[in-house]
Length: 377
Length: 89
Image (cartoon, rainbow over all chains, first blue to last red; front, side, top):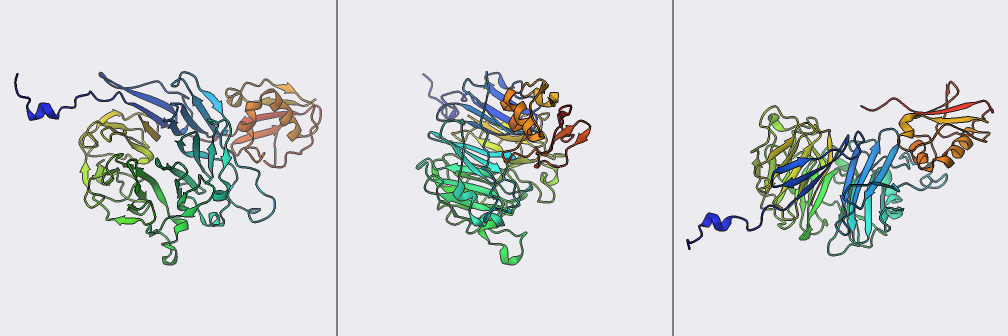
């Protein structure tokens, strides 16, 4: 028998996992399935309807899709048979706005405009909304309860909209070691954490800095704009933040955020994906700047760090390297559980996957509707 | 009795034929109409009970003046039309 070569030994024993990619867009939900023939984009669920957030519940396999109907409000749908049938379920809704007391003249409407974050803990769903209410459901979405002790924090009066008229919750992290430990990120209201399942909260934004604010307010924890916060699943005390003003990383559960020097070609962006196993590794999709939300010089790249943000490599293989105007929004860059397969989708309808941990990319479509959110299992 | 009718843009989400309702005000007429199609309520009203920003309600030929003051009196021959406002892209 011939001695195996080094190359043969390096070949994965098992074939690429049969991933499924969910793509929530302005005009429906697309399910993209991997097979040996390649990635196949299916017909849309909810054709024509804006899908703003998705959840594939890791505990029971249920699919959830949040719609933001332009005219008719937020709707939430659930499927327990992998998308064969969808059932309308309750959508998060605020209680009656008080007609007296501290919040009587609250300029923020007490009406859910969008579900912006959707995550699951064991036996519980969490929905982050615009305006910035956090809701939980312990009955699979039949009913929702507002986390009042966050919504009624007096500091909320200082929060303001980032990209929308009002502040919103887009990132929800459930600590895999302790589901009572929650971290939420608010644009613009900083990063907040609860250690008791949402009963009490404190702002953990120390280290973040908002250069667009007057000097006296730049380090105010209550006005920070963390575009997206993610953690390393294997070491959840390591968090990454793609902020409006650059990239930050925390190695102590968000108690302090360390600024990461802006990589080339830019530190601006919306999306970040943490490597689920390696706390030193993360991916970003840089955009030119606040004022020019497009790739620098028309060249789309994915930035990767493997050393905790000290250095970055820019990967462009398989991505348009001229004349590109794609922007990956907050929830539109995802990694598989082993960190080997990545996917990203743009607000101009481009969809790419990488099967080598972000080094090279394959275009699945340039013609989808604007992409808000991806999920990859 | 007043008639309440929802435009196809709404009834494609939750079926609801035009119906005659026993109601003296606009708010009461909508509530009565929602009895026949409970799912339609959240498409027309937000959780504070206001007409959604991109929904337009007419009484006969007149667009209602307020999204929150729904105690407008209705006459027995009035027709309430609920349509989607023109917006989006």
